[in-house]
Image (cartoon, rainbow, N blue to C red; front, side, top):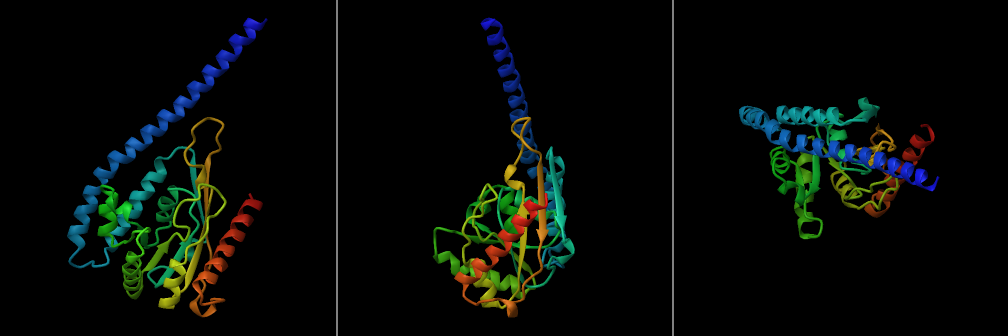
Length: 264
């Protein structure tokens, strides 16, 4: 009897291990596809960027292509679904600071799926990644070296220039991924930029991306929900102190995140 029970346990363990290997191999294949297609899909992007450069200084066509490019990656992710609510509320081609909570790397791909034309503020390390960094520079995104305060002045100058050209600027105030529904502390940069340039702030709430890709059968499917909230005009800011304003907007996003989970 003991021997039979032992064999059953070994069988169950073998089956579980096999299923885990399936998801691990599947996820490796997905990353390989992403890596290969990055280089392949960069070629038409580069051609489009060069052809349109003389008469499309804002790189509208290239950015449009970038959005379809990212949407392709959403389409190949298994067991991953994206719902976007209030897309019509998005600030488009107007000066605005757009902020969002940040749960996972997928958030960036998902926000491209809104088809809004953001100028992104991102850490300098991302600009050094082959293909990804090239596209970020060519699209006019703004870099920041977080551990070097001297780069902040240049970042704020670049944000001011982007806003003066009626571009919405996208910033994750947490500065890094939370990897859960628990938001990290907000940094002041986004709010200081909004106050200095007297532009609205538009909050976006993302939930579910922290789950990432399934690594075993019992993992839940990745259902990413995005809710776009109304922009808050500069004149209606409750305070013009960045340290206080960041807490005000963090509270807005946290409350909406809680509601989204209550209404699941």
